Image 1 (cartoon, rainbow, N blue to C red):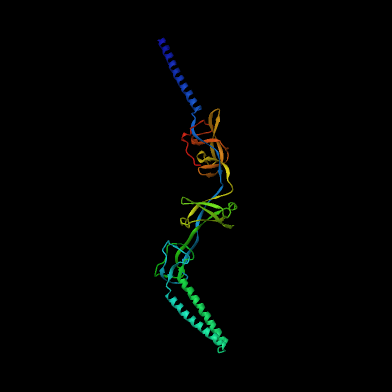
Image 2: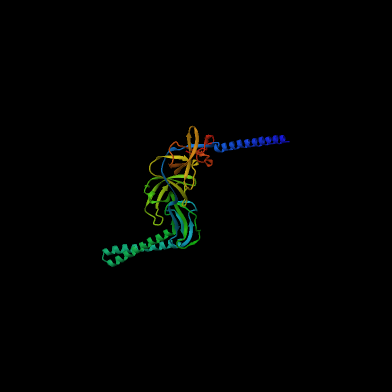
Length: 358
């Protein structure tokens, strides 16, 4: 009986010892795995020098070269309309003719009076040589002739105001009157715009205004298209409310594609070109406390990463200017940095490296 118990005890010791040994080996394996995780697979890129033109970027609004609302100076009934909505008109073209029959008759009456006054003046002038009439009679005849001439001029001006014409060439908008309609003084008839060239007004702060010069080239992007123009004028004073300087640029607009009220993104070259250090935007980790990259360290042919704080600048395409924190040819992680931590081992595989714009 004692022998059986001894054998059973030995068997239990061997069993539990084996289990303990297996568990011990498993724990050692897990510990080894935790201590040495497999390297993370990443793609890489390098900080490179690139030629860059410093620019000023802002937003502006287009305004017509000339813009006016055509209104009538005299009351009257619309006799005829000589333009269509949206049509191009030349300077001096009659747009609206108001009823002027009575005014034409009045002009003929004044011309008859002028003719009579002129005959009286010529007759008295001849008779004066024979001392038949006095100088006073001649003076009176001369005054009547001058008055008749002045009345004709006044009536002709009135008639011209009944024929409402375009003050400059341009595109007419949508007409707001109809034939037979009575127009009180100042009725809005149509808007007329000359949009070639077209102006683009924008505001800059005082510091940026000092770097602008009249005649400098500007680029404007509107509705997905880019246009080239030049600075026409820079205001002489700052706005008292915004403390900004108003600047006006002009653009050729022969086809009328650009219209008053459209907005545009402006780019204005400033200073000379310079070499700057750049990185693709994908390589940068943006955070409220500061931007950073994962710098790849090669030590004894083993790659690891260290997180490096950087100072970024302007954006050039899909690249960002690096002002501080890196030097040319530094190798950094392009993609895969989300899973990284300080000092972690990495393996570079650039076969799936995303394409970047130059």
